[in-house]
Amino acid sequence: MPAPMSATNLTRQFDGGEAQPNDPGATIDWAELVDRLHAGGTFWLTTMDVDGQPHTRPVFAVVVDQAIHVSSSSTAVKTRHLAGHGSTSIALGTEGLDIVWTGTPRRVVDADRLAAVVDAYRAAYGWDVAVDGDARALTAPYGAPTAGPPPYEVFRIEPRTVHAVATDESLAGRSTRWDFDPPGPSARVDRESRIIDASARQVFDALVDPTALAQWLPPEGMSGRFEHADIRPGGSYRLVLLPDDPVGSGKAGDGTDVVEARIVDIVRDRRIVHAVDFESDDPAFHGTMTMTWTLAPVGGGTRVEVIATNVPAGVSPEDHSAGLSSSLANLADWLAEPTPRH
Image (tube, rainbow, N blue to C red; front, side, top):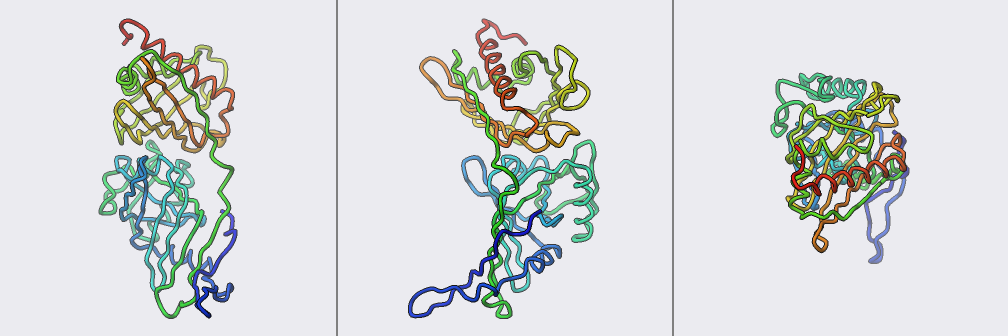
């Protein structure tokens, strides 16, 4: 992770009625702050739901490569929020210094990174945790009081802004804010929409029925099958997409595309949000993509819009646009049949 772009002294002193900054060199050293984080403790994680409502819970957290990593049960509310990629903050009180770290969460599925997180947890908390390779997550006989059952998904929180606020006289005048460059280019957003001759209720039912999804979601030239599907808030699914023409590598390297997804949010007849990971050894396809399907009544039909955020670089804009449009056309055809096939 790059070093902070800037460090700013936050303490203000008053002279003649005007606020003036203290000596800009009187800041907390970044290495000192990281050492305090390494020591562990009770971190307080605040996430946001899709409507902007805050959700705060205590968590175990560790620093690996100077980024905070947190773990959370795959069934927990905060996991759904983290997967939705809203802005996240995490706070820790240390002796004489309170730390608030704000950034963007990204799920960690790389085996080497998960192993490093395991080592950090054991060192900081003595937590008997291990990598669950099948779930691309962690497992343990127990967790934090609000952790829930395993598997525990791991999220890396890249910093955008970090505040260290002195609470002791020994650090008076040294409260500091660090600002960071974004961890990478702005998240790519792809979107497509279509007006479908069906009610919002009919469209919504097709969005949450696994049998229907397996039929209309695969784009032209592919078919699909679910290895498991639990379409509800906090649920998940694993979808295998099979090409009609097997020539080609596919993202999974065996001619198929394999999608692991979690359901972040569902609002009946209005919206469903998926957090999607492609199974691939190619880093160009890594990263969690958020897919938001929204429904809006239009005349006698429904406008269906799909917005994909944080699209992996390996997915070309042209192919993705064609694929999303094809899925929407398939959905329209599915709903146009007198009795949709099951």
